[in-house]
Image (cartoon, rainbow over all chains, first blue to last red; front, top):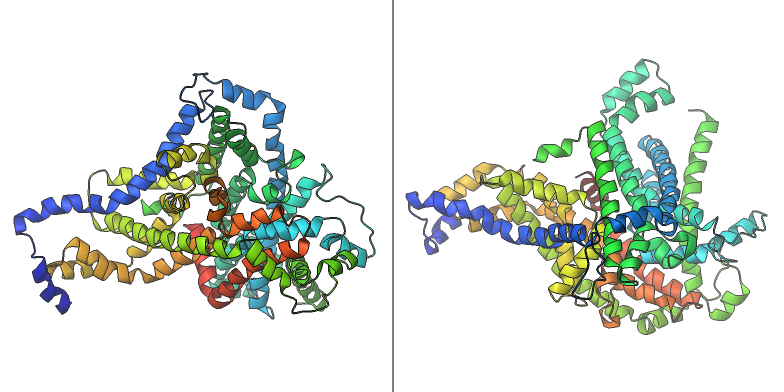
Length: 306
Length: 273
């Protein structure tokens, strides 16, 4: 502090009257860069996406024609375009399984278990791995004579399944990879929330003769409801925006094409910027709607930051 | 707890660990094999020589992994420095000053957290292109800086715990806002900085989407996109593809083992905020 006092000679404090005036601009000096970035990379894209979605622009040529809601009409009437929404259902089902498993393992590991940290670390680690590396791991896992077939042969099953080649199976396999990858995050979030429940409550429950199911149902679940609801939102938004795993594993071919893969292909391969923007607007609208519903159902303490 | 229940509990944990570890183990084993071993043995057969690192050499040189690690490192340094400075400055302006349109500014940041990055790339591409940043290392850097609202929240959350009286004392000593920010607030934000560097660092290291869309040149490959390009020339060479994947996973594993506790806390704070 003394150092501050002596060195401040270099920049003398402004006279008393000038102070408020200088301070009026200070916050804007600090906010200039963040706001410029925010506008350039969030608000301009959202606004221009909305306007592109009403045109037939190809993303390159200088002119485009206004087509009204035609792109949206195409999205919802051409089966090959809205078909990709059904792929999301596989990932949505997978995230139900994922949240269930995470809840189970978080509950088990919140009690006294041997090698607790080892188990915790192993279950969480997949979440940290690079997505392309995960895709390679599972490309090998699912190929003919790969890891999965080998394990099944050990177990005495001679599998004839084409895990990635069979159109009925490919999305199940890919959604399974998604569970493998993301379960750990849900698990660690749940575990953190369970551990912040006061230990006295468990003791009280035990004194009241509650069994494990009762403790789980009436103590743990209510204690972690906010984090469960957050996970549900992340799961829904995540199921709609699946990209890299199917893109790297199958190239997004055939049945495994997801909404984002389709949008990217429309925009950057087929130069249908207008149609791709409309698709992106629909996705954005769905995500905002889901978030809004969640905020209504579960009041969020995050809002107190405002 | 009954013996049956306890057995089931451990059985389920061990099964889950096997499910996590087996696919990765198969890749590690494969990366140590010669092409001949690969064609004769099964996926989980053990390699003949445990120290056969030839595939790693091929992956590193022919797969351009050195360039990839360097590009990733450059992008990491610039993005992380920028994210930390911008996050801290925003938090400082919002928490320590009263100004007109403060609620509007906060609302703009808040709404932006709801917009998933994957949805807007169609239009973001035009902005990046318009700025002349397409196919340069600056494209991912500005995008990581510009769309990172979570870090701002981590800083905003943390700056509230720093007493305002510290600022006031410094002001009485004659320090201006710049001095207060750099000398007092910024050093005290260290824990928030650590959290942001960890989560953001891992996210950038693993990101595929942005470099894939904005840096198509081979020379600008980061680890994700360079690894992705293994699929072409090494498509049938599983021993090299496996070595590439292991090369990418090892740094993450080392970091995780060293910083476990910080990583758990960081992701918990980052996801909830």
